[in-house]
Amino acid sequence: MTAQGTAPYVFWIESCEVSRIAEKEVTEMSSTVIEVLKSHRSIRKFKQTPVDEQLLRDIICCGQCASTSSNLQATTVIRVRNGDTRKKIGVLAGDQAYVESAAVFLVFCADLNRAGQACKAQGGVFEPGMTEQFIIATVDAALFAQNCAVAAESKGLGICYIGGIRNDPEQVSQLLELPDQVYPVFGFCMGYPDQDPERKPRLPLEVILKEEIYSQSGDKALIESYDEQMSQYYRSRTNGGKESSWTLEMKALVGKESRPHMQAFLKSRGFNYR
Ligand SMILES: Cc1cc2nc3c(=O)[nH]c(=O)nc-3n(C[C@H](O)[C@H](O)[C@H](O)COP(=O)(O)O)c2cc1C
Image (cartoon, rainbow, N blue to C red; front, top):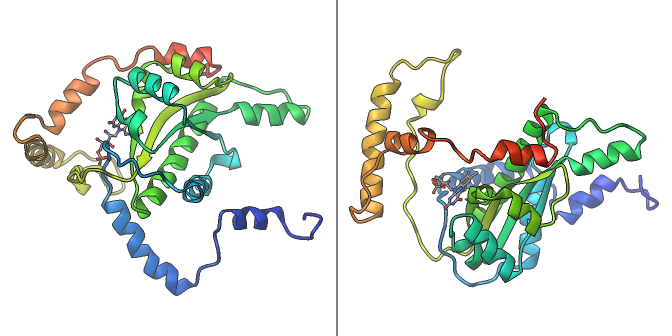
């Protein structure tokens, strides 16, 4: 309890502008949440319209409300406003211009540094380098960011994750002055959409939802039909310019080494895998 006799938790909830919602309202909201989720598509062209500061804080607060393993809260979000830094990160991410042009650009970091300091402050000995903690921190950052994504989209904003920052995570970390035990998981562009792209079809539900055991029975035919759907999607999105399919994309993606520098980079930041 605080000096005023109110639990700090209540202050936090109030600061997030979350109020108690009647059960009926929750039921009505649910369909809206589902509609927002099903309408998602990444946005890569943004209007210059700024995002209201309070709305941005609410969106980040929604990220904080996500479940977090053992209440570790292993996410730190860095908002990058500096045009120079944004430009550099956009180039490092593979010339992704929207890193610079989006109204808001955030970097979501997996952060074990804060918990380590808390441990030491309590007289403990921080045990860094555990693979389990690396997983926890990475999952935490992803759940946090996805809550932000949904909150943003529910307010008419568009978003795009930028995994491209891991092309050169060392330089990104230097630009952001990240300490040991913190690594940049992905960037995140946000702003009012200046495009209305088609939604990208997903694999048939039967392929990703299994009953009781992992069975691949029937998957081949379903994936073939999905390939056809994706080919059409790419043709329509590029006016016939792109001939591809999901399996062809996977060949390009997992048929080669992917950012092979990541293991050494993570090790250099204290994520040692043991
Ligand atoms: C962790 C993560 C990293 C991503 N990195 C990039 C990126 O660097 N650049 C980009 O344009 N899109 C990026 N994306 C967006 C994906 O390409 C996109 O979500 C996927 O193709 C599905 O399309 P949709 O989001 O429009 O449904 C990323 C998505 C995730 C989840």
